Image (cartoon, rainbow over all chains, first blue to last red; front, side, top):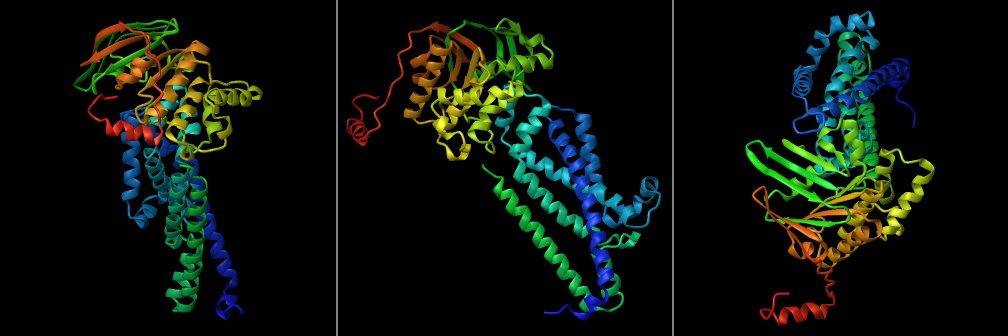
Length: 222
Length: 248
């Protein structure tokens, strides 16, 4: 089987688009894990009746997460332009695109983290407290261990959403597979090229979902 | 060993414990019995400050828990073991790891950790199951793992919140045997909350009866010994056919 001619013709651009998508999604994943995970954990711990109960922290985090998630994503991108410029120095390009993507990634994943932690039986937390565990010990040795398959599944769902979000980053010159499909396939009537791009995305999503589901099943001993 | 002085505890409007005092001596097996909602579990949970009293003092092992900083309290809790009705094991950790957790928390020396974990599992007779996960165990085995976990840091006191209430009679007898053994061999003071009269009568030296958030009465009793039920099918048949004669 030979590669369709059109793919060969646009090979360089396609590879570049794939790299851009990986950068945008990769940075989003990092933001989700490095910031979204702690934020979601704090949402859980500061909730009423939990060990770090604090109404102010809980309500403000909860509000911020809700606000970010209620924006239509395209509007969030536009709304964040001044902030993006402040951080990256420009609001245009792949690097700039990672800013709004990371913000939505944090809000998105923190909510899923909170949900997974809420599924842990309360008694496990009580056992942890009764054996004198510190907050850090409770989080690392109990919460994340008990919720790990939910955390992985949540991240899987999030990554797939990040791919979807990344497809509209063309509006700020972020590039990526979605942008490529729209510019060449839709705007220049190269439907076959668009279909090939969609196939790439489908394969990518299938692979991520399969990996996520498998990993979460393997680490679930409950 | 454990002293509660005029402790009270209410949840929103409901007053769960109304000014109660009691003293539990070293080496006792102390029972707390009463109807549902009488406040017996709350009273037990006050003993390691899992519930923080609204008023009053809690003293364990000569230390006043209610006056401690959170760091001191965490440290004190390491020598107060606790087991629960629903075992509360970490389902994603193996039997071995479940028992190792309290030791890690107490910063037990790493090179001695394995020995200590195995020692605890041997005490409850489960050393052969150390690589299993809780989901692969029976209820009685889970409770034994929970006991091994509670014993890991060599506590002075073991608090038991309805330890046998989700177990069948034979397994109950088995768990009570383990608790009695802990008391006799290791000298651990044990407090048991239960709504099952048989459980309390079989191993407790002293019992408090709770009613409506108060200690109705406290009495010294002679433990009647653990009833080992016959589990042969013929025994069940006999019990069924002579129904009505006596309620065993």
